[in-house]
Amino acid sequence: MRRCIAIVVALCAGCDSGRAPQSPPPAAPPPAPADATAVDAVIVDADLSYPKEWIDAAHAENERHACQQLIYKDGCRALRTGTVELDVTLDDQRKVASVRTRAIKISNDETLVEKCLLREVPKWRFHAPESHAHELVLTVILADMC
Image 1 (tube, rainbow, N blue to C red):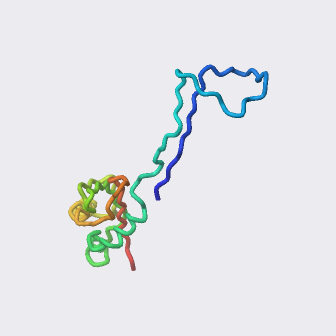
Image 2: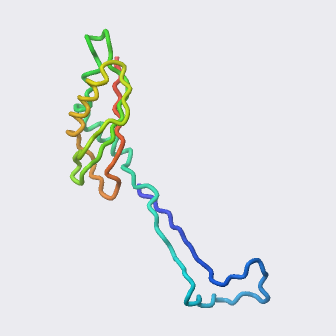
Image 3: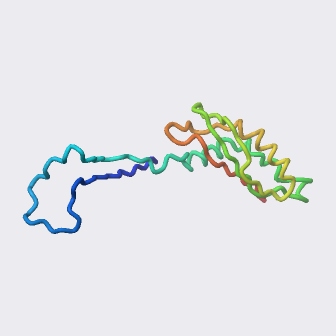
């Protein structure tokens, strides 16, 4: 969802500071002097980040490329569990333009899991960024499902 904040700024030239008016104000304000500066409205985008629901949809659509097969090591005697955060940049065609590791906390063989994700995440497809940011943080969780 795109949220906008309207900021209205009006500058007053020659305003009295703190003195009460001698007569009631006129019905319509007088025209501003030629040297006065006024900005009517400035629109600022408050949130153009890549939407979380699109990230969640990408997780669901690309599960086969999430390295979940690495959870089990040596049967069920050892597990590779934890989280990996990746910085992902998208192009306009839904493809991953670049990916790099932001943080990794995996119980066993962090390097193996990281290499797998850096190889597989570029195969993911995301919702086209449109007017949203092309950068996002992707968190991959490896957890025992038993």
